[in-house]
Image (cartoon, rainbow, N blue to C red):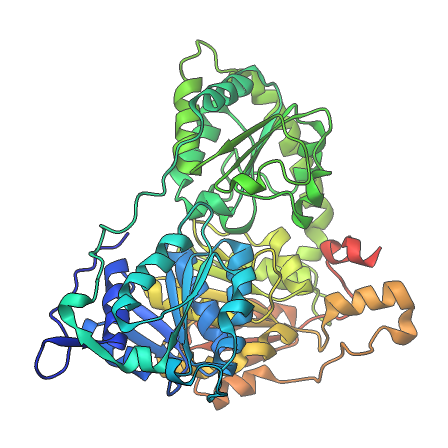
Length: 569
């Protein structure tokens, strides 16, 4: 948790009372929050006043969904909870998608929503809705602040719950009269930084840790999947040391991508299906057996399966396992390595042939795809676009993917070069996260380059906040894979109903998004020739502005992942 010491009281002129909005700001400061993402409304303006006094930045956006996604993205980048503040009624309902996405992605954040005055409860006040009832099923904590004295206390409670076990979002609604009222300073409990919640670094059952160490040592063909929670728990170093010391091939998904750099002898990507079919031991770290894992059915029934997760409810869900360990991935992986190191022979040398077998599978898959990665076809093949992006990335490039089919292509090719440098929506599959994730990443890490790939449909959902990036001087390199379609859905419709109904409800206009970028003060280019992709990306980087390179890709080509989706079978 970041340090945050409450400043001197910002109160009424007599310095003996403090308002609800200033108590919110003090509680945010105690948590280490240095920015809120928001869209203004009359119910919440006292929070802005408090943030100004506490030195908390206010980034105002054009849609509340963007504010919530940005808070989610901030948490992913920094490891600290993000915060979004929105007004009541439609302001809060606009942010619900962002809360839902953070919930499925296990991202800790706090959404604060306004509410009509308690004195007008059930009277039909402006923008009054039952926010808590609506958000409770998709959050870890949702409550109404009943009195000004409780404001900071409930903010700290919301943060505690957001970090309890597998992290997630919390929600607080604060009625207007509660927020605007002032109470005596001595009656308002303001939790002190670092003193109102415990460490979340829970180790697993020691006996289970010893058992896993033994399983690895005895294994001839192990494999490990490093998922979101490897980054959530900042377990990168432990994971790398484990796979290198014990000679285990590693696959990565979600925010776990980048744990091992491309080219590392233990970094594997294209042979996962082969590995999960032929391994004798499969270790799944921080990834549920959801649709991305075929609900666990893609793992060999003959393999010993071990699952490590922060959430007890996730372990063994949808598929039986041989060993489940609940706790922090960083603590558990380091403990497993320590236990395995106690054996005279860890089996590492004997697994050399297994890694060579998988490397052969990787090379075969890569050779098969190679012609498409360098294709000169027109319209541009999506594989050519994502390959150009992969080559463009540097060690400091944070990659953001926002789209359907085009981002499915990128998941097979784009490889971040450092931990924490991959951002995608997560298992909810929410389109529209791109611009807010760029905003969060660029605010939190201004020293990093941010590169974002959008589908044209996805960009359209939240694209107006490109202007916010211009207004706050947040340069990034944006690429739109433009096929004038919601192509992932288009494929499914053609597959199910035939070509004559394949474009019903999913076909978009031919939009020159480069002009949109320039209209809002950014940099833009149109690209029709595959040879111009790389030069256009370099010019966008050199512009020092928010940019959109609009690349026209072939709408008749679909990603293998799109064609294999079970919903279309």
